[in-house]
Each structure stands twice: as structure tokens, then as C-alpha cells.
Length: 304
Image (tube, rainbow, N blue to C red; front, side, top):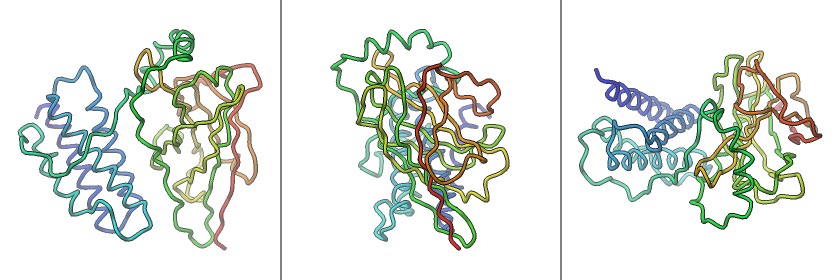
């Protein structure tokens, strides 16, 4: 079987897994599966060196990703009138299976998610030298940027007796060139010791307020697992990302993380590290010697 057919088979299996969870009422797992698949499709759509799919097929894959995001958003809404129903999503199964031969009109009037190139952590290492010149170039740029897909923050999980849920308010981040960062946002993930995702990855909306050496977020992030169910050695990661107009991609500038013993109510200030993001926490390098940090506030919700 060719690599491209294996990829399609993998996407189809992931799609089935998501719709199965969805039909069983396992909504957290369904959202997780939909978002992972949407990201994989997006990656394929944005890949410039892939010749496996035509531009038209990539456009169709982009629309499938949009529908997955829409279904995901419907499940996160507490209202009962779902905007994008499971029955509608299921119509896309044959499109994924037959993407190489599919030539009909797409069944829904949607557009592919607006894309910017998002680099995997390893791909950014070669771009270190461009950071300074880009900052200078981006500061006064008047170019109109395509809108980023909105933040993918998830609602708080239902409470369980004797279990705690954690809300982290991202207050602000201190950076020497804070004023020059374009469309800054944070990606929040929970990883085990091997760097494997334990929860759906969440993105904050773009921060709009900058002041001196600070970018203010003032946004609540609901951690998608009860604190007692987080495995030993897990950590919560915060990746600071911004748009580079010269290179036309979104890049990770730095990251921070919080370990399990740091989960306690109240304010916490954590150090910033140089990219690429080291989810295994083996080779950490501080971003700066200056007194610049990520400022958070934690709230624990316990159902007694």
C-alpha cells in the first residue's frame, strides 16, 4: 500500500473514532479526536513540498478540517441546538475515504480554515538568526494579515465528587521586545514525561494589549483533566507564539511550564525558556537573564 493510501486510511480511522465517541456521548474524547484530525489535515493543506494531493484536493481537505472544527465547537456549546450535527459530519466519511477520486461539489458551504504556516518545534531551530531582523522588520509593518483561526479554549469539565479542576488565568508575559510581537497568542498543552499529549491542546485568542515589556492576556484556561488524574511527572506547557510577516508563518518565540508540585491556588510566576519547546524537559535554556517571566493565577475547584 502506498504512503498516501496509508495516510488516508489513518485519517479515516481517526474520523471513525471521533464519530464513534460522539455517538456514544463521550464528548471530551470526540472533541480531542476531531481536533487532532483537523490539525493533521491542516498540516497537509499547508505543506508546500507535498505532491500527494492536488490543490483542489487540499482545498477539500481544508473544508473537512473546518467541519471538524465546527462540530467540535458545537459540542463545546452548552445550548442544545447544535450548529453542526453529527449526521452532517458523517456525510464527510466517504469524502475522506475517496479523496483521491472525489470530484463532486462539497456538501456544505464552508471555507478552509484561514491558514498560516505553523512550524513544528524542530523546524524552528534554523530560524534563530532571523528572530532579531524580523522583529525590526515587523515593528512598523502595515501589511494586512489574514485572520488567525480564533482561540480554541475549551469549557470547564463537569465536576466529580472528591476531584479538583484547575483554572489557570494567563495574566501577562514579560518580553524585551513585547511591543514588536504581531498577533501574539499562547498554546497550552498538558504532557507526560515523554512529551505525549494528555489533553486536547488549546490556543488562547490573540492578545491585544501591550504595555512596555508586557503582553497582557487576562484569559482563563480550563485544564481538561481532573488534577488527581494527572500522572506523576506530567507538566502544563505554555508556548508563546507570534506571526513573522517576512517569513509568513507563526513561530514559537519561547515557552514555560508548570510541574505538578506547583499546582496550588494563587499567583505564580514561572521562567521562560528558549525554543524549540522541550516537552521532555531535558535541555532547558533560559530565554534571558532579565527579570522577565510568565505571570499566572491558579484556581482549584473541588466538588466535595
